[in-house]
Amino acid sequence: MSVAGLPATMQAAVLDRGAQRFAVVERPLPVPQPGELLLRVRACGVCRTDLHIVDAELPPHRDPLVPGHQIVGDVVAGATPDRPLGMRVGVSWIASTDGSCAFCRRGSENLCDALRFTGYDVDGGYAQYAAARADFTYPLHERLDDVHAAPLLCAGIIGFRALRVAGVERGERVGLYGFGSSAHLMVPVLRAWDCTVYVATRGENHRTFAASLGFDWVGDATDVPPQTLDRAVTFAPSGDVVVAALAALRKGGVVAINAIHLDRIPQFDYDRLLWGERQLRSVANMTRADARDFLELAARLDLQPQATTFPLARAADALAAVRNDAIDGAAVVVPG
Ligand SMILES: [Zn+2]
Ligand SMILES: [Zn+2]
Image 1: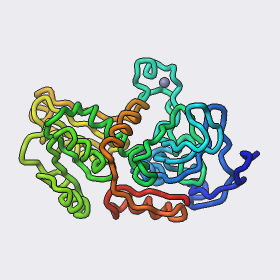
Image 2 (image 1 turned 180 degrees about the vertical axis):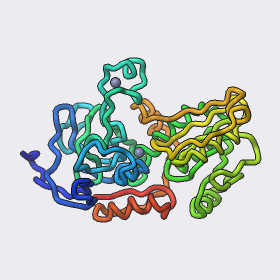
Image 3 (image 1 turned 45 degrees about the vertical axis):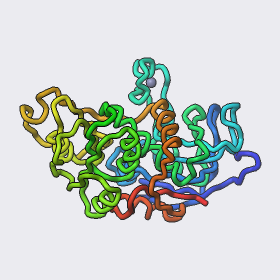
Image 4 (image 1 turned 90 degrees about the vertical axis):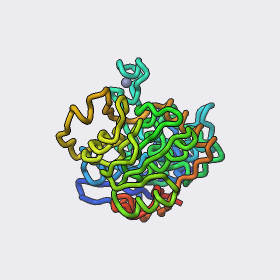
């Protein structure tokens, strides 16, 4: 079965664990189910979580799978009054929730018991077409172009959620531990809030990039900044970094861990590092409210994240670039 007026097949980058292969293949277009839109993909950002999925650091949920959960696409089928044909929308990490569990009812849909994830439980955007539940898509402001909007859709939204979880207030001293796509997107947000930003990151490339943006302080991943921090967000999948962030915190400060996967958290000194009502919190997923609030702010601030594009045929290279910290800012796959 195919969708009227559209080609029967498309190119898609497919992770096939059975065949131990990640390759671009021809496959049928997704058929949108009731409540779903079919999107023609304009761009899809590469997220570090895609690496965890492709590298099997996260357990498989679907095989074969089209990864990718920062999708910018045009509605080509399944249109609704709110999402008419031709509308450009974004899709993020949360593909759907049940809307009925205790977490959804208390407004914490990011913790839903039945969460399904884009590019993990359902096929994602490393493809020419993708299906997505209409009520989990976000109309995109015209000021946000495709390539620059894509990295906002997970890296940006979840980074923004991390700032909320850390409780960042105007004018505070905020540490960013790790300086990949998500962290660098938070810089204009923090500057708009008059915060002082401290960056600690491994890798000479990331430090040079961060220094070029004119921060007061740029250090190695576990260096201690010259002032105590009010808040810190860790982006690196490393427990050593979490402990380093804790060590930089004032009393009552918060470390928000923005990582879906950590190697482990080493033993640390409670009396010195956590006592004093310091808090260690994790950041899980995102809500649609986070997405809407952040995308509105991004349009207002005219966020233009640094991005490197890769054609769909080079999706594996885009993942490798993120894996190897080979590019500044975000990698974005463009199906063309
Ligand atoms: Zn739920
Ligand atoms: Zn992501």
